[in-house]
Image (cartoon, rainbow, N blue to C red; front, side):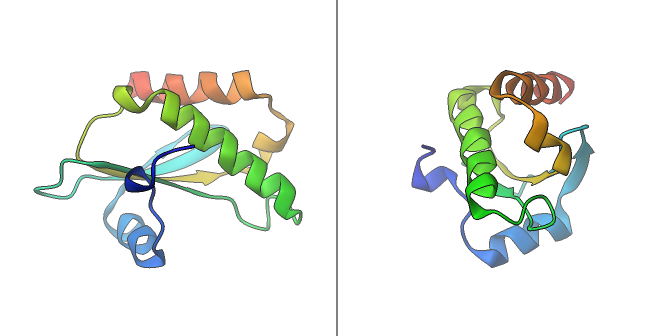
Length: 110
């Protein structure tokens, strides 16, 4: 599990990243990245809407998978960012390895 200091939790934090962040696209998800001034930490959040799945079990599974991938690759992300991942419905049919490959592909473009 990702450490608490590395997680976005407040609704206001998500809204600020949505308002001020830059949007990147992928077939499985989109992500918003915001680099606030004088901020040296890293914070991440995952949004899985009910449109993706009505079952909380499936939404939480996707959230846990993405947070675990981020935790493993935490050093690869630059410092001073707040990042929100917006999941798309296609991700339900993908395995862990495919999701991890997509995250690494986006990291290489960044």
